[in-house]
Image 1 (cartoon, rainbow, N blue to C red):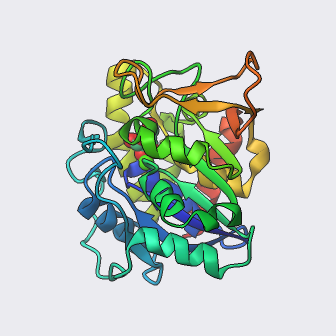
Image 2 (spheres, rainbow, N blue to C red; image 1 turned 45 degrees about the vertical axis):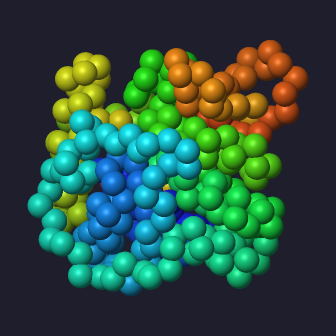
Length: 311
Ligand code: BDR
Ligand code: CA
């Protein structure tokens, strides 16, 4: 199995991404989870991450708290999408498992230094603050990263927090710039992909029909989370953004895209956090990311439902 660190700001879709990883030990060896401020403040994302592990009956997973704000800007949160707790929908008990004492950034650094070079994949599901901070603090770890598979950005689908920017990149554009210019191999799941991974009513019924605590909780998370996209965009259901990352590690052929140059806008107020993706190859800037554009949504949902059923 592939060794990974999930860096996350749960978030209902982050929660499903974590559950998918925990349900797939043959493909994924989850070394640890680092929480970051994003959808909601850090104290809540660090708590939610542990609630999700306990929901999956995996209280031994190591969960660390990382950065509580972006590198150079005030924190922007998304309670309007995820609710006050970040994980509105199901009623889950407060976590009993401990939060690790070490700072999440130091955990990322120590893990990349301790494991064999090229064997650890980073999976950021929120703003890239922790990853950028680790790269700034310990530049030697960059070349040890096997791959960064992240959810963030958009090209054809442009923005969901501003007309130009996707939430995760918008919240910490400086961090995103550090990561995208680091030289580490990057695979991106942008809105172009995740807006095709929609939990339609039959798909949510399939989660509920698992009739397990996990299946029911995921259906309840979706019931809450889908309101925003349904009401605002008239979409057919909630987009499962972050689980695209963990699904890719299990079944990469569900996704297709292009290896292209992606730069991050960090200057203009109007387009702050935009992922300027050279999809058509109109510049000679070197490719730095595998930017996904399409997903086999039915294949994705059958994988996800089958795996959630294992928990
Ligand atoms: C991203 O923003 C968050 O609200 C979601 O959890 C996802 O990571 C989508 O833009
Ligand atoms: Ca997220």
